[in-house]
Length: 421
Image 1 (cartoon, one colour):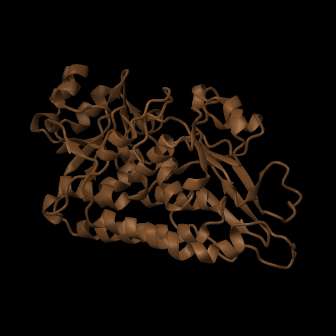
Image 2 (cartoon, rainbow, N blue to C red):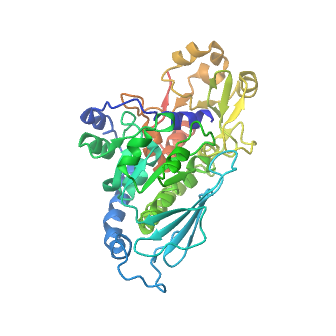
Image 3 (spheres, rainbow, N blue to C red):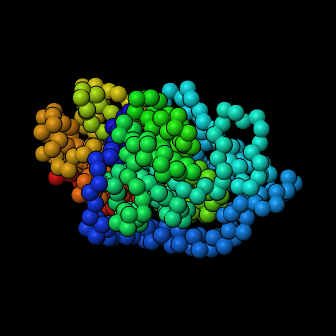
């Protein structure tokens, strides 16, 4: 996987229990700007305003099944995400996840059956899941704010790794011993996970059977919802996967309210760069073991850079995944680039120079125009960018605009990005 995905996914590898809730929470009491406040308000309003309406038809089991009744009055429409689709039937939903990783040879199908109604016939290859699900385990930090936004914290019973958590709400659950640490990938504790008996486990796939968790979980008879949000070519496409999670809990109305608010805020921020006179050049990533992982030209990161008013030097590439390049080809093309973003774990220019002295050949390095998205790390290296940033793409975009065109957002203070010195 590319450098972005490696950082996002491997950043949560289980390393045992060690958490200091008060310290971790206090590290997250950082400044909030107007956009963050608006999103938080939307979460609150949707959680309270939609809850009473949903409980009547979606929170419990059907006691007297009527084959002519539509049990899903609130139906989702998927506008930006390309990796999943849903069709509604009177008492069940049919959900498909296509091409959840680069090779795309495998797809997943789910039949979500309203509790108290019969499972339809003819779906032997699909996972049959009774909805609304009552218990949930998530194996990626990128889903934390989906869980929180949909009001599912009381259903969360397990996560992959306690050490990497930034979310104050999840930290409180850990401190109160309300959730379990189950590991993931090669460190996944299958027996422990099975004993927890979750209705659904949410994870992702890479196509590597030696690394992925979904295969062993399914062999254990555990139902698994496979996310593919990291394959989406746009930031809004990634954020819209909150709707995928919502389908398993009959929280369609709440998900629609949340996402519509996210999309409106993103489009509002994006408008500021429509008429920029110049677009500074930029490249991403770094070399790892001789391979430079560069964002694909059709990736969500490339979309971020375009929307932020920058010219990504690999924008003519059509890949959604990271490109595997050699150092020399990157240096040849990006030696004079104005900016350099997303340099893995670097916290300073000295760290980069220590890895490879050739990094100092880039003009962006010489000028101190390297920005990394690791300004908000917990004590164990867990990055809030891969938690809160997924549901706040407008704030990520605002950070980038502040970097490339600071005059457009004079009052914005960088949230996740920071200049390396």
